[in-house]
Image (cartoon, rainbow, N blue to C red; front, side, top):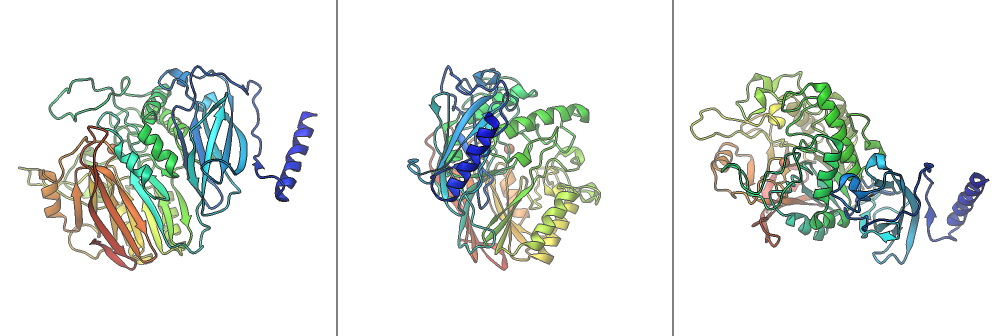
Length: 531
Ligand SMILES: [Fe+2]
């Protein structure tokens, strides 16, 4: 009887909405578990981890929250049962004009996270969303839909950021990103770090100074990962950046383990054992990110490479350079670029992702194409004092030269002059041009590698051997600095501008933001020009 009534009610609501008689649209109901708690009571307000939106398209985006009344306690202080959560989407920040309302279920299996995939919204405009549960209401977040693919668009702006070691500094950069007039954030990864609490006192002179401490030991089990996300996500500046704009997120290594590659970790753990850790880490990652259901992990794999289209202005390709890569060579140390780094049977993307990317670039009719990924694509060599060998990183594209040659060869042949790449992971700002291998070859594309939000503490600026050597040995590298911050991209019809934003300190919460360097690139003329 109830089922019949509900179906009748939904179809009646649908026709009323279609006729424009109702201001909001009812969402399709999720299957309700028998043990669902519809009106829970909490010891504290449950929305302690903020809200987020992500993966927008022209008709919607994901809205996210997680119920955690006691965020650092086991299970976030939640009862072990599914809980009903209400959500609403409005046309204005004061929620005067509610456009959609619905209910979602926060499952204990997914750490009481909520992922709602909104549909049916108008393109190219902002929306505001919020959740309520047990008489409590979340903060409001701001999301936005994209313009329809191919529609005329003059401008898109975004921030590139990542590497946010909680212990090494405050998230002042996120507070500034929250205030930037951007369309989206690309997070290239290292959202959490898996390492242990380092203790109040430095254990060695090389240890970076810390401003706050991780809870617990190195994280291995799903409860550990959940607690680590809860600790990071309790930060108000990070919450402000999530609430301000939709994000496209990707993971790098520290969401699971330092420098992992495919089934292999850095400690020589048996692959089948490492995969169990990877599965738990990926589940916790999904639980805490505004990702679509299509990215939900299936065991130890999750689908993370995906695209987005911004009108006729920009097609974006978000890559995953961790899950499908071959193991690093030369012991995963910075090493001379020997033949193993060029071996054609090694890959950083895997064949399927590479084919997807190349096909997408071939089909793109947009003015620009963005390749957004995790690790440095420039092939940068440097010398350590007293060591005659030129060294490159074996964890970046410089350790996967066959993949690199194929990608740059494809860009050069099929879409010259309209591809830009952004990346991160190296805890310094790098901006430069992309050429095949080394030397002074033809400029094919350019790269902005965004420095860290906090990893590396305050840094040393440009006054160190590594910077001097890198600048001297890589003429296509146009800027390099060891400071914390983010990259801002401002994409127009003919000009792509990039600003390297830096903070003077993250040891206190009141660091001052400035622009270290700015470049522009003209469509059709590859190469960064100082601006
Ligand atoms: Fe990092």
